[in-house]
Length: 362
Image (tube, rainbow, N blue to C red; front, side):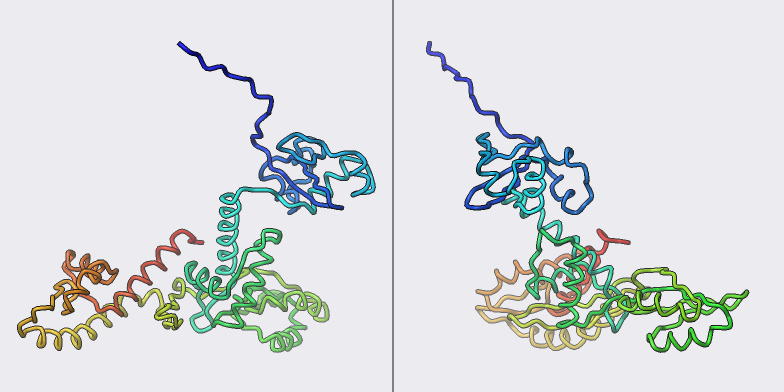
């Protein structure tokens, strides 16, 4: 009976190692780091170099264990101090990750950016925030690409500027409290008029007067400087002022490659609006359909009782696979009347929007 001869492997497999690579003067230099520590170092969260580096060693190839030559280090970096060289590679080098890891990181950062955009913006007509799915769709429409070298907040502010140029969206105002002596109240009111501030409440009890207002985020720093003239101060109460009643349900549907805007419906009136729309559309469409469908069907026609329509026999199979038919099939089982295709799309979009907001309920 033959036995398999197992040869010892003289190579130490890399586990729990993140490689940072830098090309300089035609040479490749690499360092071995701990995973998830490189980004923490670059964002200044982690300040201890020993917690980031596996060892203070510079390699030309980490996976093969080949060390970089001293003459190559002096030629490329002007020094042979390994600690300084490691810091430079850590700052300027490229983190080597697999395709799936990079895709997961970009997807997670894209979601973080969309969350920040949702928190900091509102619909100017309804003064309510857009839903998460709506923000992500708008970011795809402006062809936004995540930059892993920038923070999520920096990229979110850039996204907001681009969205304002193309869509009805604006920065959510700040809710602040201005406090000043009563003798300087007139001067404070003049400054509020210059800033186009919206006064929410006013309190003149005691020797100090305080006003709760909504202002644009861009003028906050100038407010702090100009309030010194009236001996006042400003206190931020909320970084994003939203109207009560939930999120905006504005949706942009891509129909035949044309993006159309569907006007928003307040969250508190969604059910009533859908019910009313269903009744009116149903009375108009079903009455005419029933009259025409009362006649005998042709040889090549079939009737869908769930959707209350008649169609060609060859298109019946595709219709049964559509989201419209499946939605009406569920409504029929629950004893509800059928919806038209337009009504069905609106109801599905609203359901997806509400489902997306449940994961990000602040």
